[in-house]
Picture (cartoon, rainbow, N blue to C red):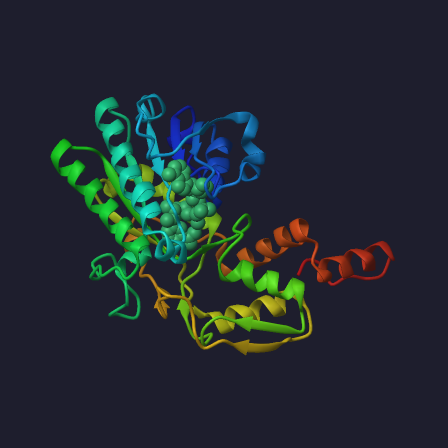
Length: 338
Ligand SMILES: NC(=O)c1ccc[n+]([C@@H]2O[C@H](COP(=O)([O-])OP(=O)(O)OC[C@H]3O[C@@H](n4cnc5c(N)ncnc54)[C@H](O)[C@@H]3O)[C@@H](O)[C@H]2O)c1
């Protein structure tokens, strides 16, 4: 999907811009010819994630919860993509106060600035975590919201705040609930953890939980496409969309797929049985509403995993990448991209 006509020459704010999803969104907007204001407090982001676009954006090192307000950053923006938040469930269990400040107070500050300056639309980033334990195999947007972690509670509070501003002040808001997204620059969560564990010891792989936890993973470029679509589609105003993949897969199967793509000997796999507090066994989204406005997955799980593996090989030089490059420099045949 090409959004040049909608985003070229526009001024766009991305909060959480130095994070995983935010930095990919920034790169795509820059490619589209957008003037990007990229805000991040670098509490969890990394400026290196913005390396590709660093000379073509305005980077603002500030918190969304800045008590001094954000009018100077928000004012004049044609779109506000608000992703800046603590994005870790386990961390929210340890430090709920941080989540409240960044995710609730921060969202309030963004809304106040939009209200004062007339910027927008606002694309608010919520999470599939707001659903809590699933009552249906694939959750659509009307599934009950019963958060079971402080993180999920703050995301749902953010959704309500945004919706209330929309009703009271007539703001244009669009909410997305992201299911697990993966890809290059994500240095946490299951895909990255599996690659890192294998890099350190490719003969033994420990998997948290039973391995039967299932997800509908989405590749980050596909998630970015969904953001851009929701930002401009006329039906998306005042609406909520799940963003996720379409393939339901267990962590056990993800591990098997990664091992196959790496082309390494199968390691011994150990399941810890116990997972982390707040982990949800089945987290699968129904993305029918998003598909109804034209969303299509372009990269998908397997191609996305190949891209993740390539990035990981460049960044961390794992044994399988070293073995391939020495085979190449020795002039022998290679099995190509994993
Ligand atoms: N990646 C996923 O699978 C997923 C799933 C559900 C929801 N989300 C949501 O998507 C958004 C992006 O997630 P991500 O995976 O890129 O996480 P991330 O941690 O990589 O990015 C979040 C960014 O927000 C920044 N940030 C945190 N608090 C801030 C503050 N007070 N002011 C300014 N910046 C702040 C961090 O420094 C970081 O760069 C988050 O809102 C997250 O809750 C992500």
